[in-house]
Structure formats: structure tokens, C-alpha cells
Image 1: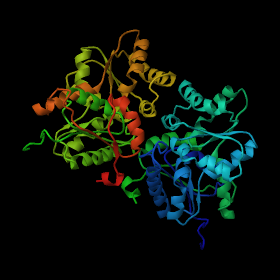
Image 2: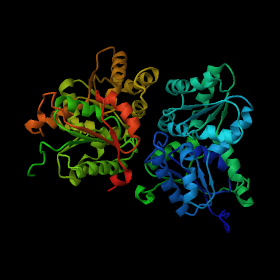
Image 3: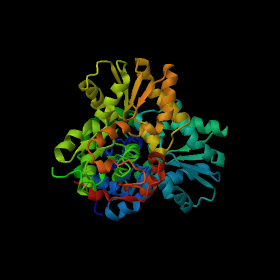
Image 4: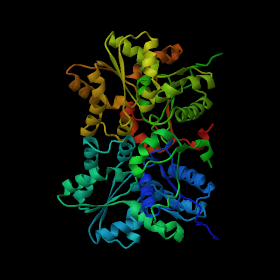
Length: 279
Length: 279
């Protein structure tokens, strides 16, 4: 590759909806000079309840939009896509692609030592077995327990981030992991950090212990760092790269929610015609 | 039309996912001889959180699949599609089309008399104002209160039909309607009858009264009856029309849930390639 990671090109980041903004937030904190083009597929969210074939089809369409806009690399800020479609994306596109699974698994293993690890993810992520496989590939020998949590993404997209409903849903999904002995939990979906407070307090209450929660955002940012030119790793917060947000549906609703995920007020959110995202 | 409602042709019924099966159940009970072709767009469920333009695009694709298979009429067993896309469907297709809004509004008005009416629906249905407009068109003079309930469809699709989480979610959505004075509630989404028990007990508890719940299924069946030939209205339960189920994703998961909605064990559920549903 001659100069695929040219300093001027944006990083492409995509997710099924809002969740990937938790990764964007960390990338913006770490690499403020780096411009980012984000795509949220809000016309087809959630991905986590769909089949691998359907998720792969949707992911190819999202990646295609970003590649046509000349991003320097793709960050797949979606646990479900990272679990089932990363190999297909790597075959179809020749630019660097960073998913969330291996970086998160590495971070979890570093925190867990030999303690059991629990994985909370979408139905698609859990069915794929991607996290246990990644952990074993990294040399994990401890038990790994998994739990699908399909209702957490709708809760986040609805904005119910505290109160009894998310608390009871979190408890129901966490209990089998904690009961099995997990003391380090991977938040295996980029939506879940928005429920971090609820997940942390329920996990602690269920275990009577402090449970370590592992998010993908900082682990992904470390992997992205290795791809960037020095100018893009510029950490002077006065040098601000652009952030462009694209969605496939409901840009105004997305903009209204985005601040909570991003930690900054986004500029205009642009709607992308679904038809143009078809390969 | 020469003979559009030929006795041999199936009725076409579609919904975003599982919810429309509550309508199929009633149609099968009322018209056992009538064969039915059902399409659930499980690759893109839920519809209720999306924009009118996106819902209309999806609805046209679903209708197109059924029309190409020569259904005699279309039953739009989805509150969101009925709210935002019925006129477009009627313009695009020349067969009879039955939605859920007007039949449900008529049933609600018959039950309510002059009492206030509350509408529970998806974000899309509520934003469209379709129920209040239909009620006014039918001559309703009482106050009509509406409440979007985006989490109820994910709860049903996840199979959480009782217990604390649906109870608290139901309470949160019902309280504004009950507090405003509604004593008749329209379940303005075909998924909601699966939560009927929870919705009924919470509505009664909140009001200290008996709240009448109106489902669309029997109201829709009345409207369908007017379209059918005598042979199709045959009520001998020994004469069973075929029921063919199509989905755009995850046929096995759909089949596993379908019995609870249908009240009978379905035959094989067939997956439809999404590409073939594109207009």
C-alpha cells in the first residue's frame, strides 16, 4: 500500500446505530486531530438479533459507503459485526480493518489474570462464540461464560439508561454469569457502556464483590494508534479533526441522542439514502 | 376486477415480525377454510422506531412479495405500516388492502361510548397521529390520549411476556394515559396482545377500575369477512386452509416463537432472500 493512511483522510467508523459513538468518543479523546466519518445504520438497527448472513450483508453495505468516501481505515464499532463479518470485510476491502473482539479480549485477559471471565453480548455475538475463541487464541485457560442480552440495545436506543427496568434487565442477564463465577465482565457490545453504571452496580450487588467491567473503546483506540501517522496521533486538544455523522434513518433523533454517547455536541447529522448503500 | 377474490387464492398478511400472527390467529379461527400467506420482515424488525419514509419503503417491498404470489387481498397486520403507508400501498397495488387502524378505532369507539380513549402504539404510529384522526373521522368527540411504547415490541420479540420487566415497562407507558383519564385503551400494535395480561393488570391497578383493552385482530377479521366469498367464510373447522409462513431472516427462531402467537403449531417457516424483496 503506497500511503493508505494519509494524514488527511478520515477514519471510517460504523455501527448498527448509536453504540459505536462510545468508540468515537474515545478515539476523539485520544486522537483529537484525526478526522472521523461515522455511519450508523439506524434504518436496520439492531443487528444483534439477526442471522450472520443478514448482518454480513448489512456490514458490507456500510463498509462500502465509507470506503467510497476514501476513509484510511475501517473501525468496526459493533460487536455483532466484529463477531460474524470481519473475515468477509477483510476479503472484500483492502484497507486496514479494526474490530472490537480481539482488542477487548486482550484487555479482559490482562485484567482477569486467571479468574473466570464473563461475556455479555447480543444474541448474534454470543451465538458466534467469537469472544471465547479470541480469548483461547490469546492463551486464556480460565473458564469463559457467555450470556446473550438482546434487550439492552433497545433499552439504550430508547434512552432508558437508569431506573428499575434497566436494573432488572441487567440483573436477569448478569446473574447467570456471576453465579457461574465470572469476576471480570466484557461489555461485548458498544451500546452497553451507556448502561455501565447500572451493570456495575448490579454485578457488584449480585457478587458481593467488585466486578471489573471491560469496554472495547480504549482497547480499540490502542489498536487504531498503531495504524496512525504521527500527525494523526497529535494530542493537542486545540487541533480538532472533523467529525461527520451519517445515518440511514432519523437523523434528528440520532442527533438528539448523540451527545450522551459522544460527550460533545455533534454537528449536523446527515441522512444517507438507503438505496445508495446497496451493493 | 374480474374475480380478484377467487376462493383458491390465499389472503396475504404481513408485519414487521411476529406480531401479525395475532391477526392470523383470529383470521384462522374465523375463516378456517381460507388459506393464508404470511410474511414477517424479521431482517428489519422493528418498524415502529423508524421514519415514515423507511417504513413505507419496507412495506412496499413486503407487499410486492405477496402480490407477486397472487394473494387475493392484503392484510396489513402492522400498526406502524397501517399508520404511515396505507395510502401509498393503495396507490401502488390494485388489490383490496385492509389495515388495522380504522377497524380498531371503530371497535374502540363502540366500547368507549363517550369515555376518553387512550392509544398505546409504536413511536411511528403515535407520531403519525393516525388513531386520533381515524377516531375523529368516525365521529369521536371525547378526548383521545396517545403514548409511544417503543420497548414493548423488543420485549415481545425477546419473549419476556411476564415478570417484573414487562410489568414495569407497561406501567411506565400506561400511567400517563390512565392519569389523563383514559378508560378504554387501544393496543395499537399487533405485538401488544402478547402482553395483554400484563397490560390489563397494570392498567386496572393504575386506575383502580376495569380498563377495556381493544385489540385489532377481531376488528380486522370483521373487515376481511366483507371481502371473502361464501366458500372462504366456511366455518367448518374440519376444512383447514393452508398457512404458509415466510420471513426475511431467522426462520427457526421465528418458528420457535410462532406457536405462542398463533395458538397452533405452524408448518415449516421459509426464509425469503432479502434481495428478492427489493423493488
